[in-house]
Length: 119
Image (cartoon, rainbow, N blue to C red; front, side, top):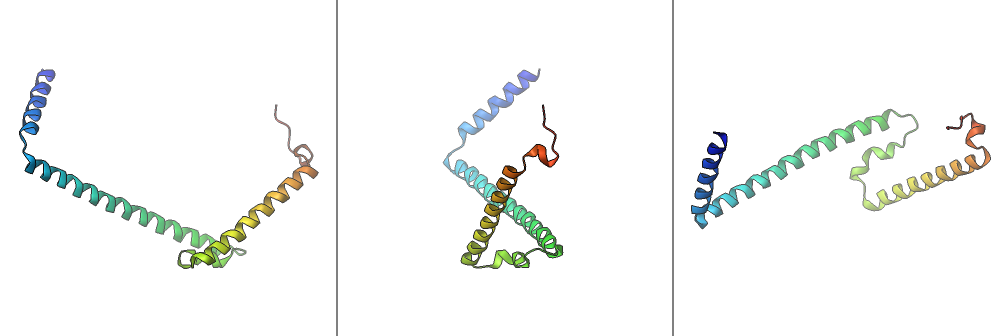
């Protein structure tokens, strides 16, 4: 019963789509292109709203942190050269932190810092 209904529907769809002329194919293609275009705008709008909310949350965390660099609150509006300077500063901080960690581990192995060796 279901196979028969499916076969009839598939046959009718094949006949209908096979009988469409170029004008109908152009209308269908144009319609799907417009729908796709609108979906891209919808997705972009949603992502922009999510990004804006995330920036506000991060700005609030920076604002309430006593030792935070308040300069970071306005990164989106800064000139690219200034952003690059800040990025390089934070890369240098990261390298310094990694160097300190390496030196600390050389001087004080994990077992000596109170860690229990895992089996």
